[in-house]
Length: 231
Ligand code: DC
Image (cartoon, rainbow, N blue to C red):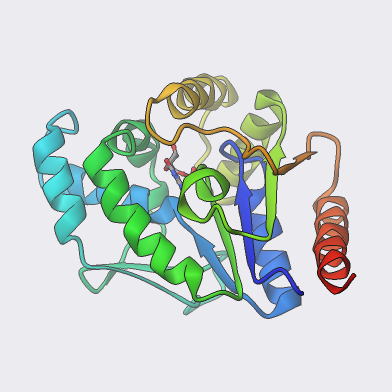
């Protein structure tokens, strides 16, 4: 049996998206980053002048949002196109304002319910590498391979800092570090679907590993699952 559903969870900037994209392209699977959905709900909220703390209004936005994720339409470093009401918001959902508010939005049970249903539908079709915080624990517990990718908060903040430089939009390292600590705290202490490894997840720490090393380790895990299925 080949792992048809692969779940990759972990904190922000641990390298989940890069790993998932590499695995998806090696296996010819769909790459699906569920964080973009929470980011799109947050962006829609900010754009509509709704207060982020207005749970009822934010939940209504999540339920009504016309959201689509498609293969990348250009090579500006994006991993997919994110379309909101038909408009390309791929980079807008990465803005500091979204970063700052997305943990709050993703805490609301109604928002999570709406997103989880859509994510599960896509995941159950199989041939998918799905990335998030609660894929192995809540969205797709039947995934044959669950990886929890971790890294020190300093290493993760440094990665985000380098990315901001590359995009020509530098943000101070200390600011990024502070925000990342706060986001980790909110994501892992929320009552519903907190960030944590599933009991049967394999934990990989990418702090001192190159992108290639992480990929090789993950590919070996896929092969292990395949062999176990054949044994
Ligand atoms: O992976 P990311 O930084 O793009 O995720 C953005 C936010 O969305 C993150 O702070 C937590 C939330 N999220 C979540 O709660 N559950 C998921 N499956 C994916 C993301």
